[in-house]
Image 1 (cartoon, rainbow, N blue to C red):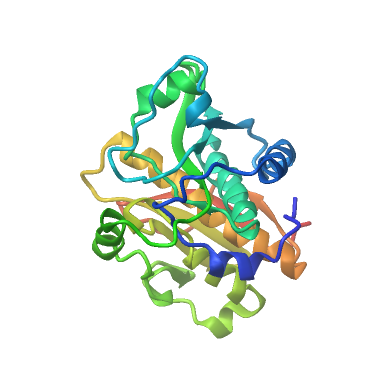
Image 2 (image 1 turned 45 degrees about the vertical axis):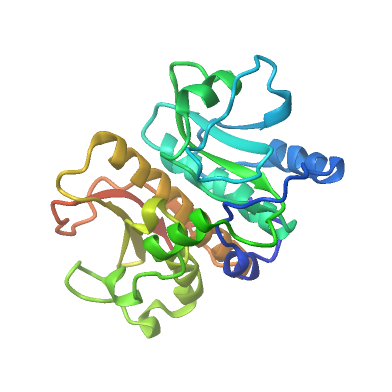
Length: 281
């Protein structure tokens, strides 16, 4: 489903916000968010669930910790999904769609995958043991000035930097960079994918164009833990949100497909996730 917002403009405007004005969300903005959450979908057929809680009204009195990373936030979003092949990808896609809606509303957010007290949020959001719970985000109005912690984090992670085009997009094989000319009408969807946020700004996505398809891969370090690999799938879902929503904005044909054989030599540190069939509606 195409979001009813200007996608490219919103993607370019989105920044991670870790310092918030101490006033809570207005009732009007809260109502808009709840309505948006109820209408969110994903193209992978997964049952993604979005949770919204307010710090001051957590029914069980549970405190919500973010290890000093987040300042001033009173409202938090969480995302959960069933354990399945595309569960984490779908969670990343659908939660990022909500982040873009929030950005268009003038609200601040930031993806948190590790820097929060998972047990506290699980209790507060009543999350079940059999659910995957990859991430949360504070949501609210950005403070007029960033905290020192936030400024240091942005500098350390090079938050405003992204990998160059030629390191991410390839033609036919991983050894051959895709030119923007050969990307043709997909140059904008791919560029919006390139701008996607990711855990520690790792940008773990690689894309290979071959014979009417764009094939999407997740990459990780050879010594990555299972938890790290899981987060990379969420990151890819975020990137696919940017790609797919931009495709829809431009009215391009196509659909996602998982192929049995993509006939590409895949590096050891990469996993094939899904493909975009440019010719199929």
